[in-house]
Amino acid sequence: MKTLWHHCHAATLAHGGYSIIEDAAIVTRGGLIDWIGPLCDLPQTGIDQRVDLEGAWVTPGLIDCHTHAVFGGNRSGEFEQRLQGASYAEIAARGGGIASTVRATRAASEDQLFASALQRVQALMRDGVTTLEIKSGYGLDLASERKMLRVIRRLGEALPLTVRSTCLAAHALPAEYAGRADDYIAHVCEQMLPALANEGLMDAVDAFCEHLAFSPEQVERVFITARELGLPVKLHAEQLSPLHGSSLAARYQALSADHLEFMTEEDAIAMAEAGTVAVLLPGAFHCLRETRLPPLDILRRHGVKIALASDLNPGTSPGLSLRLMLNLGCTLFRLTPEEALAGVTLHAAMALGLGASHGSLEPGKVADFVAWRIERPAELAYWLGGELPRRVIRGGDEWSEA
Ligand code: DI6
Ligand code: FE
Image (cartoon, rainbow, N blue to C red; front, side, top):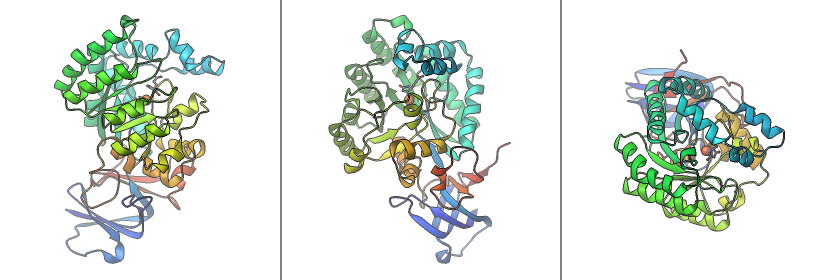
């Protein structure tokens, strides 16, 4: 069955930047894009069904390539404390922070975690998100990490959404290992990752490389294990201090290094050579009221691909709108709206290892796209959240919220 989507303009993201086709036509078949180009060039053969997009702008389905959307409870109390002067690190040192979400996540049932994550993921979907990465990392023991990863897999089965699952067992030191970080990392590498990989619960492995989390040496042990298990890696790096985690990630051909406020030019060169995507997270920067900007000029100069994500998590970025992140990426980090859109489409796909199949409108790629009723693509980064009129097509089928 061939469907023609017409009466639209397209920002295809296929050949660098917006890659605009005015008065475009898209033919989909079997869940894939069969043909895309100017309507006047359309080969008129064998169209079964026509859909009038009423002058909309079509973009690839949005991809949120860094979220922690599954968690118990929330940390609005810590938000209040931070506004009264406590720092993220101070709150963590007194047993709050990630540890408090670990307690709430361990206490929640799989069904409770599923139900609360579903609400958040549906909020992201209302923004045109068709592909989403979700990390574990609030369980920090085998049973609880497994529970989180199962919820992540279930979300992918329940929703018209491509969900990639990342194991972040090396997110923080669980209380029962206090003072024994090396022992915990050994447990992650020898017990947790092999068991969870064996159960097919993850697509990638991530870690948090920071003074208040794990050292580069500890992260490297996690990366070696991931490599042995045949899984790609990602890294939370250079968010609060310069440990050169992003260079380490590049040495292990990481799909991405994320945050990067404190990265150096050497880190950028290593990432460019390895093809490691820089994932910028303006929601966390904003909520922690950080002042050190990720070095955008250095990333551009060395041709590092830049993605943008919500980092949806209960502590540092309770962000339920990827479009809001487009705005924050532009206003806080000085991305152009065009770079920001590439950051939530093609470059986000690359950050998930999906660059060959997702992220741009090209023949042979999956037919995930959004038809927005907007005047120009920059409008996607212009509004501060809210709902934009749009139609979401996922795998060639139109999604409508029940
Ligand atoms: N960096 C982040 O931004 C999140 N995790 C991480 O390693 C924050 C997680 C949290 O505070 O709950
Ligand atoms: Fe994160």
